[in-house]
Image 1: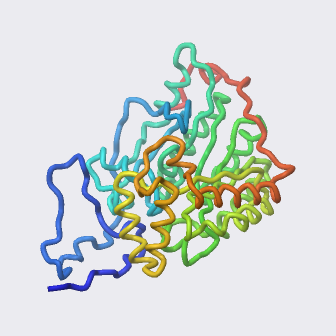
Image 2: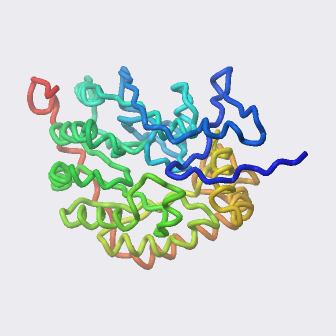
Image 3: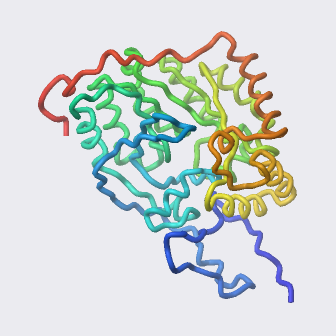
Length: 356
């Protein structure tokens, strides 16, 4: 006997389900194929959990991201971007990469203390540290906790370079610190814009700032002399790939000095989450988009091969690279990000007493 599949779209969240955590023995299952227990995934309130890590700066030795140093004051992200590669890391905390990632947020209140300890390590040489390499350091709870702001105060006090990646306009709250950092050549901001299509954004990144809002952020930062790069990432072939020139042009018109992109990679549980999402969100496009993603990753959705997992491969990927190159040549020919200044680092932050 055949049963109609549930294709209702779960509004307000990116993921449409909780995928199984591979580290756990038990898992939740649907006992009724008719969908009688679907309310189990009701849109519950976001919960916050505190972690007290022993270190806060992570170094990546991946060939794709060699010698990248990063800080993630939060794990999990309310923004709910369905494609987010960071979802898999939530399984290490005993959560699902799906809905749990969006509504169970891990907070690291002691991040500033740990960063100051890192700066004060014997023989420390300044490196550029990314905020954040995994989840957004300016997600909604940052308005209240101000962990990222405290970290920026330390970067300024120690005169250490910092690069920020975000898609939230909360960053404008810290424009005072960012302006000082920029005047010293100590900051780059990377602003992510995936689409200019508001209907697509609402489903793809349900709890993020609109594209027009992000363009406004670029403009306001640029007016203060804060260097901004637009991240047209990830590019999802057949869904937002045609928008590359328009995004780059709009960002440059607001003051962006550079652009970068990655092709979507559906590693780990994200392949299941994204497949479920696109069937519900765009049923008429689902097969085409999934097949185009596969064509960029040697016929697979889940691609872990270094190089290809970010840049893609094959004809579809090559057309995306060419489109991005054309847009860059047209709109960014006379622009570039200023270099970071590594010569201003102040040991002990200029004094012996701690700020915290």
